Image (cartoon, rainbow, N blue to C red; front, side, top):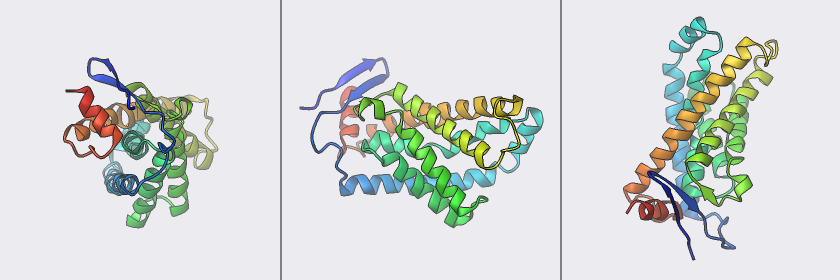
Length: 217
């Protein structure tokens, strides 16, 4: 039997039912995660084009502040996890987005794009893993966005900024800016986007959609 535990105000807390087939992927799960990955790839590609000018400006104001844009490349994983609610959904959506972004003409090397997508997706999963993928609320979504941001930041320093100290001024500003961006774009906005999509009835085939609509009736 499915149990719902409404939270306070506009932030319900959803607990998944304990069923043996809860983690089994359906065709619908693959389809929706793929759609999220494809849509995210297009947005990521557009952001890469649009951010070419403003990021250097932010870096000129405060070195490392360009990290405020990083959250715009992080939302595929948390959103796919919220909707599909299967282990690996975050990794799958981020990898699909990364591969397609690379095929569309990314400014980054294809292998690098794939690896950072893989890492960001894996980090997004870590927010839900301790709860056995049973707790879905704003708090876990915000944590997912933050962890994905940390993964993005770490990859950037390990692969491209080895000469810069992680604990130095640039590293700390970049970390704070990236985490703040992940918190907002891949956490807060993703949570409310999920609720908005569920509110239309488009997710009624999913437990996530039925729970969201039921909690707001």
